[in-house]
Length: 401
Ligand code: C2E
Ligand code: CA
Ligand code: CA
Image (cartoon, rainbow, N blue to C red; front, side, top):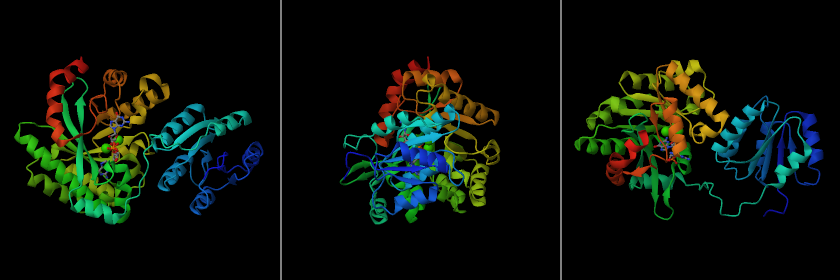
């Protein structure tokens, strides 16, 4: 249980800063201080008492702050983070946005030199979780449970429309997997994709999502629709040299042209890419499929990498789209990503269009394609026809105007 004071862990490779923060936090008796990321993670893994607040230097030699935050998320870290850095304020703000995208609460950030009063203020802003938090809780599902759910058809695709920002017409759908869980209701992919990846079920899961997506697209095609569909790939799928042939076979079986199918791969997945992954992506392109770099802006890929991997679509991460018109840092990243994508002759999709302001901002930027709650939340297949009808009647045209 929490005492009134949060349990704090401080990580900074600079011993001087560590002692300085130790002095500021002297009233927090059980705070721990680490100069190495691995030691901090070991302390967290020892599991005795998970920290409520991790105070973290963004620039460290062996593991930077954002990698450490990913490591915290892998550990199902439920606490909050305070970021410290000597870098300029803009980079610090961007990093804060990226950390928040990892579903980790950010209490705030401090630039060096650290001001004692500000640090204490941030620490005192911490409150124990009161249960009303809307942050997704990460239930751990066993691979056994997931495998039975897959067998019993409990995994369903939701479809989120993508629209042409100029005309407002619907160009396609992204398939987003859901688990219709007997006790828990609809469970989102963030809660079981990691388990699927760890247990080797991800290959079967991707097959299933692809199969369902193409079956639905095949039915919609029979109604005269010519939309495209996008399916998300895990990095592990790309390690399978049989993937391109597998995708081709399913497409052929449903009579769907490869040009109507996009495979989305997150930017972080290609950062530590292997030759097999590059081969798979290139072969998919050669077969006529589209290949999209997802969550662009959150990884570290270089321009060369984006160019060399033959991606033909770039999806700007929603962290740089939602509210970009009110935030100059987001707007600069948005614009830089759009410019890069154009320069490389790629199609650009802005995800996370949540409001009319976001919509206008993206449309005025000249970005071709948009996706987000303002257009539509992901829909189950049965709800797609009504939505299409509604959008055709009053949604699209009005918004595009
Ligand atoms: P993603 O590929 O970036 O998908 C977009 C996510 O953003 C979806 O969450 C979608 O519901 C959500 N979203 C869409 N519009 C908005 C918006 O306007 N605002 C906000 N805040 N969010 C929006 P979802 O469905 O929970 O999926 C989360 C992630 O799980 C996906 O991110 C994707 O990386 C992964 N995923 C989903 N389906 C699959 C799958 O079949 N296979 C694999 N490997 N990963 C999948
Ligand atoms: Ca995606
Ligand atoms: Ca995305």
